[in-house]
Length: 225
Length: 164
Image 1 (cartoon, each protein chain N blue to C red):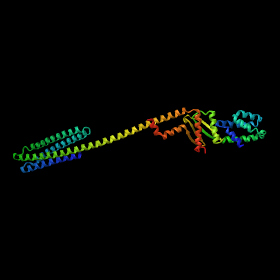
Image 2 (image 1 turned 90 degrees about the horizontal axis):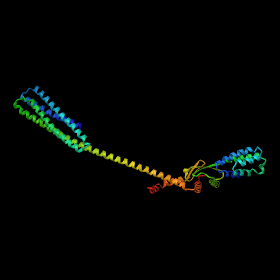
Image 3 (image 1 turned 60 degrees about the vertical axis):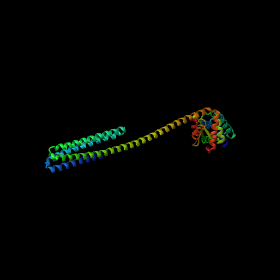
Image 4 (image 1 turned 90 degrees about the vertical axis):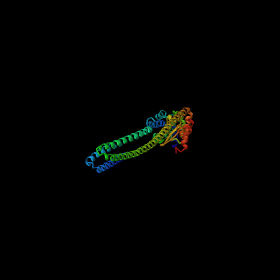
């Protein structure tokens, strides 16, 4: 996004400066205006116009970044803010460009009346051209940010889904382990109770018979061989 | 002589009785050279169990032994050798071994394994029933607790199904 915005500001500034400079230079040459001082003032004015344009773009950048960040929390709100920011930006930019044009016009207030009309038309054309270029750039920027927002949302959704799956698997694992532990406990208790009950239930005679049986079994299984 | 030794050993049921017989034979050998046969018979009466004492008395009452302490001594040493060679059968059982219980088990051993085996019986409540058997370095668990454990292991699913 930063690359895109930088390019956009570069295009705007370059376009504005080139057109204005060429137009003014052409008029001055045809009307015998002192080229040295006029050129200096024109350069100065154009430089300020360019700075203004840069400032506008930087503000737009900053605003757009805020919108993208805000989109993570509230998409609807972010979109609304984005729209407002864009409208504000376009309005401000138009105003600033118009002001830049007027400034230029003011600088050449001393130019002969007959040249003023031609000059004003040129300036109007320059302003119009710069405004259109800026508008086009802003539309592209808007499109770009919208696409970014959609992409980010998709990524977020995917991340949430993945996180949900992991949590579910973890819960399932813990549940199984818990059940297994309970089962083991029951099993151990049952085993303990069984042998205790059995041990107490057998009388002396049966105990002796069991020992003899154990010896018989051992002999039959070849234990004493 | 072999028959006598076998018979004598059959009266020795446990390792305690074996130790008693071994010690008695030692004293008996010493008595041979002190006012024989009077002291000899006194030792037989006091240092042996009724059965082992009677067995020795019967055997050494033969005329050939009457004036021949050296011969008695040689045969006593043969008996001692046989006692020392007795094999031990260790049984761990759930109950305190009473005399009747030892007699019954010793009877089984004599009938099934021979007279050269002496019992080492110990009580272990965890056996629950039956016996844990140790013989010549071998071990077998023919106990009730083992049987229960086997049932629990092989029929675990059935047991758990009944329970839950």
